[in-house]
Length: 111
Length: 115
Image 1 (cartoon, rainbow over the protein chains, first blue to last red):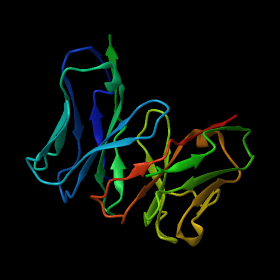
Image 2: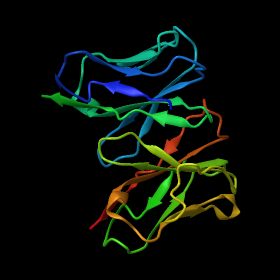
Image 3: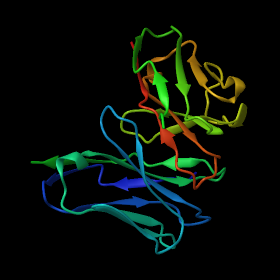
Image 4: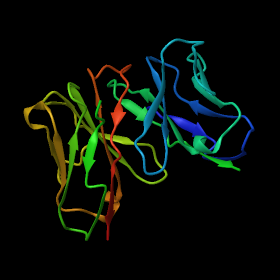
């Protein structure tokens, strides 16, 4: 059974500080990794889809890296703002090519 | 472009009652997903439709859950009868073609509380 683990479970960060968190997954038969942001009372929103080892993607102050050989991805947020408060979810494809989701990292930005 | 619509947003029912959720995906999207997200866990795929056919329903508790996607457009998910452990957020998503690299576009979800 494919397990996707995210750490930490929750994170409090001071406004203006930078932060990062981790998504770990089995490295065998890798095809794609997704990152989503889910703000309270809103729809989950796609951030990145990553497929290649060594891939780096960037969207404004948020970036992500991918290491498929060791089975992890990092999400970085530079200069955190209150609007970054959300749960960040990652997902990897499973044996039947459906997405298997981690439980998320809940990020709270303190003003 | 209109996003994925879901209704209702919230529902509270007693155990053993029935409930239905509705989803209207983004126009033109072939693939529709229903997920169950229990507090503290990641979303779990319940069923995936490609047009009006079922691609995967391996994690759908078929003794109590059913879903349909008539005419390959909108979809309903039903629970009958509900149990306490069905309390969760039910998310609907759609994607253009169902490829694993496709972005999935989510609705706002339905928060179900079973008492």
